[in-house]
Length: 40
Image (cartoon, rainbow, N blue to C red; front, side, top):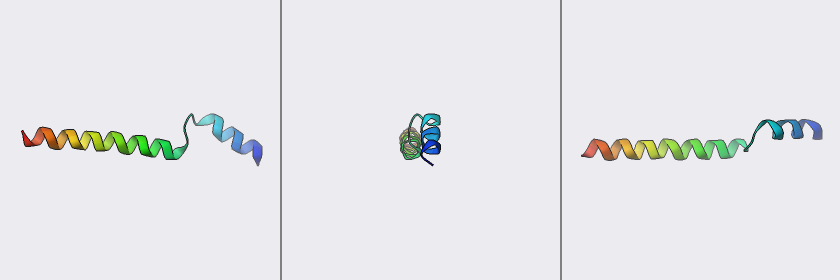
């Protein structure tokens, strides 16, 4: 069990939650830019 956790940790440079937060941030930024450009 412990070996399995070490394996999965080596595969991912970041935890899955970090990927979700980064993706959310990028999508939010793109949405913000799209709305801002649309208003002009």
